Amino acid sequence: MTTRRDFLRSAGAGALAPLVSAQTGRKPNILFIVLDDLGYGEFGCYGQKLIQTPNVDRFATTGVRYTDCYAGGAVCAPSRSVLMTGLHAGHTSVRANAGTIPLRADPEDRTVAQLLHENGYSTGLFGKWGLGDFGSAGTPDKKGFDEYYGFLHQVHPHDYYTDFLWRNGKREVLSGNRGGKKTQYSADLIADASVQFLKKQKSGKPYFLYVPTALPHAVYEVPDTAPYTNRDWPAIEKTYAAMITRADRHVGALLDALHESGQEENTVVFVTSDNGAQASEGHTLEFFRSNGPLRGHKAEVYEGGIRIPMIVRWPGKTKPGAVSDLPWTFCDFLPTAAAIAGAPAPRNLDGMSMADALRTGATARDLPPRFLYWEFYGFDAAKSELRKNTLSQAARWGDWKAVRPKPGAPLQLYNLRKDIGETTDLAPTNPDVVAKLEAFIKEAHTEPRPHNTGSMEFIR
Image 1 (cartoon, rainbow, N blue to C red):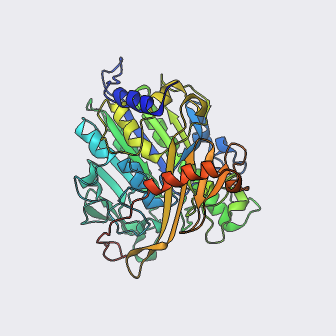
Image 2: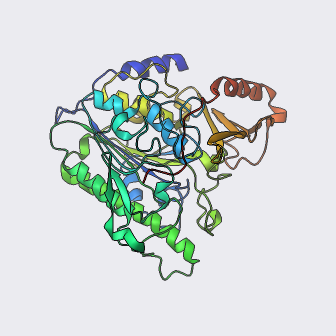
Image 3: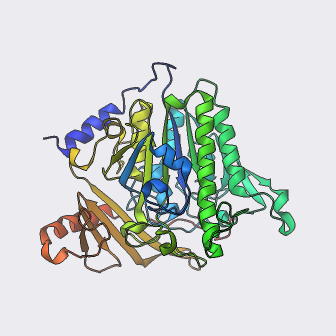
């Protein structure tokens, strides 16, 4: 039987094998698309019945759809920090949605963009960054991106009709939104810019394009509510659904541009969300069953806060229309990208490469069970510090999921294979499993070091 250590060793060796296209002689491009606060059940291919997502649903028929993939955290910034660094929520630098907590300066925090850039990739970021405001050590240009356009501060994207965006370190005024006007919808501008970046990649270099859209994060606002305008729904639900369908159109535009570029066959595409859905401004989770059968929501480490849709297409490698229950998470992306690029990944990561699993179509029963970890902190804006008394933690090992909802609380234990909704706590009858997960959680969590977070106001 292949042990976890053997599998990790083979995955690490595979990262050094160049995956050069026979047709172009180039390493694969990587396109990573992240929706914001999109729930597990909000794409049609994950069971949604009311919201239209035809482009993502069509994309799912061409790649592999993962049913047990997880975000890096239960809220935006920590989840993105995990994605960029390959360190899980107990080790990564950004632990809360403060807005001004940045990634640390090199060499402490090294991102997937830096790794790819150093291995010959052009790199672009279009959308919501959230890992370092202007002037900090964590801005995209200092973390491996050649080009970026969009939002830096975590709070700034809440204004879809903002009067400025950041482009490569400079504030770009949106005059159509000055003086109370609302004529330039930021999500559309960012989507158009991401398409233009893709279209101009003709230099022969591979590229990494990271597109973290702000849709459908609150505050809920959209230029029009088509195709739901005449539905007999509450106004807020029409707006919410229209935001998701608009994001789906943006995904479709990127996929169309990729096809027209002639590089589709040499591009690995990921489509996912940064955490579970939330209820806000009168929008309810129940109306669309936003998190499907899962318990909880954004800011909770129950499945509804961290399990996410994930669809991956790697032409010639992934099987079209495949479905896999293999559990994996955002901290696996950096080593996976390294393997795709034929580059050595850092040794101190929490994640492991999924490149071989993508190519083989591996499911949960094909690989040894592994431990996965999440935690959540609230943030005290007045004191600019983490609220330690809000810490919640979760870990998964095979079919078992442990949750500690607050500091000092006993672990709850669920069998996700039999109880995806986490309704029945099995801790009293499975003390050995609880002890194993308890030991892992204790090892996985490190105390976060303080940051100089500064003001909660983003740089204007």
